[in-house]
Image (cartoon, rainbow, N blue to C red; front, side, top):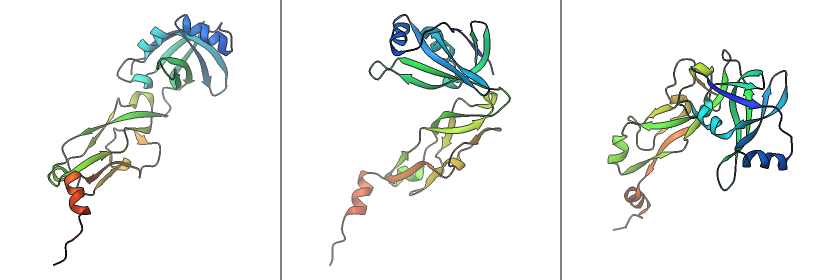
Length: 198
């Protein structure tokens, strides 16, 4: 797994006013966290940060961070965005060990065609669009496929039924539903219609 690189400065002042100045200047206020390491306030260039997390792994990318000579391997976590513009307002960088598992969130992609569900005029209802997994950084997939080919009418696909690559396991409740099926409009009307007595 390739590492992105990112430079940071440690000479930023704390406080909301100084953070606003940084953002206006094209930088993002951030903090580096890690076990046995004091939280380190830093600032990173907004454009360079976007480049660092624009690869296939997105926010799950490993980043070689150089903070004025202090070097860390980190992942971007707990990103705060501007409520209106959607721009990144603050980032927490967590120091990671490339050889140790981490908990991350990856997207879920629906694949296949639930023929039985479709022919019965039922619909596929995707209830989860991402899932937390536990994996070493090098084993983190860009996404997980959820194959609905064998989904039956009234059926459900749960997290523990999603095929995961070697070295990847669910980090949360594996019994949670990812995909279910529900009656379509016509089927729902048929089910809801009262029986007419003779």
